[in-house]
Length: 227
Image (cartoon, rainbow, N blue to C red):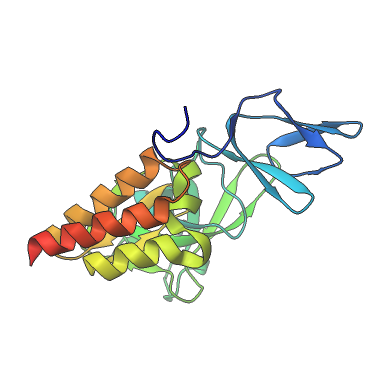
């Protein structure tokens, strides 16, 4: 019905027809000139390319992903890290920014420590290697972690970081968004409360057009109530 609520993006289910003569992207398949949806998600067309932004599913690591992990076990030359994937990822002593002697791993990272990592490689057997040796990768101290659907991460970040930029601006929180669906937040109690409220709203309304504008209004009103 027109005029009742904001318009929504097109949600498709597996087998839905997406178009003719389009170049199929992730989440799609083609039969001849016709392209169909391979998974549940939001149809996205840019130029002559079409892909599906998934609405659900387990996080599957890809090389280059920045992720937030938790140390779950320690060995003499590596740590095991839970990165919200089906299997833990080993972080070898050679992939951290410190010189770690054999058997001395617990001096640097311990069980339950939270770390910002990058996925280095994923082999054919889905074994994952991660690294902390690049710039800005680090142990995350303090703050809190919230879990979201990894499929909603692009919407939470926004185009060119527009959405996360808004949340940081109004809440004055420090934030890291992992592509594995984990978000690290640190700031005042009021700021973190407002940031979590905004993130949950984005998760719920990810397919709604004009979401960035409505989130800014919510954040502005939330900030005004604090003043």
